[in-house]
Image 1 (cartoon, rainbow over the protein chains, first blue to last red):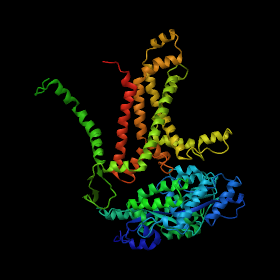
Image 2: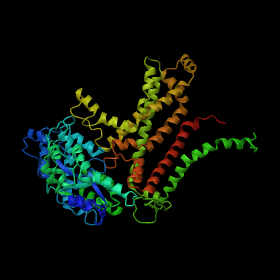
Image 3: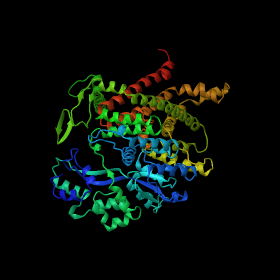
Amino acid sequence: MDDLPGVDELKKKMTPANLDSLKSKDGSKLLGLPYFTSLFTLIYNEPMLQQAGISGPARSWDELVEHCTKLKKDRISDTPYLPNWSHGPSETMPQFMSDCFSEGAQVFDAQNRVIVDQEPGAARTMERWQKMYKAGLVNPEVLTKTSSTDVHRLFWAGRYAYHTNHSYYLKTIAGEPQNSKLAPKKARMAMYPGTGATYMWTDSYVVNARTKALDDAWKLTRFLGGNLNSDWYVQRQWCLIAGLDNPYPEMYEHPDIVQSYDRWVDLKLLRLQSTKGKVIGAYKEPWYAEYDTKALAIVHDIIRGGVTVPKGLKQLASLQKSLA
Amino acid sequence: MTLGVRLSEGRFALLLVLPALLAIFAVVMLPLLYSLWLSFTDVNVLRTSGPALELFGVRVPLFRWVGLQNYVGIFDDPLYWSSLWRTLYFVGAFVLEATLVGLGMALILNERFAGRPLLRSLLLIPWSLSRVVVGLLWIGILDFEFGAFNGLLYNLHLVDGSIAFFKDGFSALNVLVSVYAWNQAPFAALLFLAGMQSISVDVYSAAEVDGAGYWQRFGYLTLPALRPILFLVTVLATVNAFLMLDLIYVLTMGGPAHDTTTVAWLGFQTAFTFFKFGPGTAILYTLTALCLLLTLVYYRLILARFEPAA
């Protein structure tokens, strides 16, 4: 897309991490314009924490485990933590990557090879997950949910203290009283624990390089993923209607968007969290879909104690090697 | 018969059925042969290297004949074997459940009672629903947080919290069996009912005169007469259970881990998630072979030994 009119202006307006994720594997070409971006975030149930006498959300994973243990012990919540461990393509593995990043671990090296077996932070993540599952702090049904959407709806019931999921789900949790017991704004976002680093991705619109209607295709793509005639109409609507995060920071200066987000999230905190988002270069590898599906099963086995953490992490690395 | 050309009766008959044969060849045999051929090739549409054709600007990878390599590969894969044992459990449990429940429903609906015509009509509703709808319906019933069944039990003070029906793989697999049986048993009931209706009332009257009770009449009259229907029901249930995919897609996606992954789901994932059509079709052809084998077994068990000697 680099030669198309107006591309340079859009590139300048985009967050560097999002721009990077829209480029070809070698980073030389822009392949698409953004549809939306998404971050993994920590969401907490404020009234429940207050009921337990907990003054604020956890800042570290140890603290989060401590809070959940107390909530279960005090019989305030049966399963206080609701992680996105569901069984679909953008769920357990992004959750795994987020938690690894927040523990200071890398998941892939510069050549997109899986290196979690060499990262102590990845082992800490999985040990914590195993511990929380074994202690009954997590609802085991989450492992058979088929989408992030299904998982976030469980949080509506107000029976969980903490939830980790894509940022936009807070819009229904904290902003839709007709659906959620935690609206308006009884559920809040907190900075991701540990280093605060988290998983970020960019969904995109692409144009077939050989299209015979390039002008029209580019016009449509700019309308959807950019600012055709200097108007960010579609991008703005995604923010207003669905609460989708946006890769163009100037979107958050629009008064309608500021007002809309204010109904369900602390926008400054969300913007701060987005600076800690890490995009995944390995998504551009042809083996990634198969790796993600098969890795998810290994991670579920680790969680349930079917395999030890070191052995499971080695299996993840070997799996990727076998597919690459 | 004269149409300018003189045709024998046999040839004329062939000419009449030819369009149907051609249609069957086009919509049944051709895809079957094509998919069989695919199972002996290395087709991965995500492959970025190797021989390919450029068609209208789209790169189409050329299929490479690999012989039995795909079959050897899947038989070497522990996931295939674990999926196969799980599939056999699923098929066995489903065939048993659907057949027994179907037979039970047919026995009830074969009796005379008020509201029988209405009940017979309602019987078909679960079977007529799309399986995606069936899956969503049962999520609504069994869900841990919002499920109607959990709500009912809680309101009747029968449970303290909620029951997690999908709490582990085995439990989730059994839920799949039961939900699928709920969907399919009415069709079995319909077939059994049709069979029962064709049994002469006189036979039952004579048995009653001879002092046969309900279970004796069922064991010595009804069941033997239903043998061809039983064969049909078990064959259909077996084939349907081997190939069942949509409920897994809606309810568990094969998880947790691979705990509800059946061979059909594995084949679907390999072909349509990983875009490996060669190994994917090879996996699914092993199911075809199993279905044929089991049909033969059923034939031997249910029909062949009861056929009158020539």
